[in-house]
Amino acid sequence: MRTPGRSRAKEDDTDDEEYDGQDDRDSLTDVPGGVRLQKVLAEAGVGSRRYCEELIGAGRVEVDGQTVRRFGARVDPERQVIKVDGRRIPAKPGLVYLAFNKPPKVLTAMSDPRGRRTVADFLGDRAERLFHIGRLDYDTEGLMLLTNDGELAHRLAHPSFEVAKTYLAEVTGPVPKDLGRRLATGIELDDGIATADKFRVVDRQGQRALVEITLHEGRKHIVRRMLAETGHPVSRLVRTDVGPIRLGNLKPGDSRELTTREIGELYATVGL
Image (cartoon, rainbow, N blue to C red; front, side):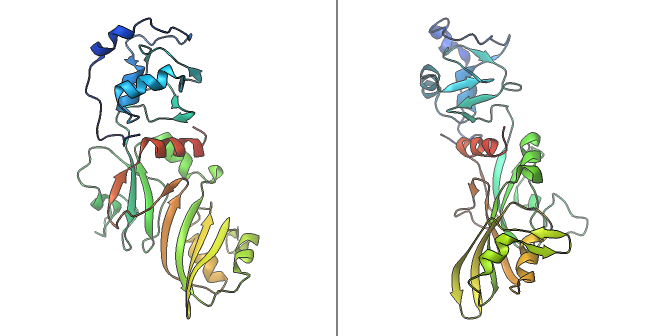
């Protein structure tokens, strides 16, 4: 699948007329003035128009929960939920989904009256109004997600959806063997108990250690506070994963568009 927002299909609807009435094997009601389904799929980055027709013919495309097999079916991408192989696609025009590697000493905000560097300083002159999903501390670096999809942003940030986040932390060592168990059992903080979903030691070097911790909490400074409470203060913290999205080899200060598959995985993570 291709990245949305880059190589879009340019054809108009005339090359699809040959398919009208063919394989009418579903009861989906066409939306008056709607857009042909294969065109919506292609413009969402699923693939070429012909490839999208193959997906439709194979029964791999759903609109509002109903399998659609007609190439000429007309839909409303603004309102209808369209899925390929059970994964929702970003059909609504104009939506943007970015992964950003936040450097340290950058504020998680789009502006700052004190003149500090913000996330917006790294995004260029984008016309869209983007939201950062959740926050990273001023000194914390790593993966952030940005979008203008308000519904997805709300769900990813809301604690009730318990989206897992993974961090690499450089801490004061040595790290005892029972630290993972202590973190999983729960660490008492001033605002309640905090628990880790996963923990492992990645590397040990003298009095320093590199550890990986996964949790679904979003309280302020939560990772730093948990590790400090156990006697292992953090000297550097990098977020590497948000749900199914990984930082990978994205360089600090750089951003990239999420693929259609990644967006579908995010939708699935929060039940959209």
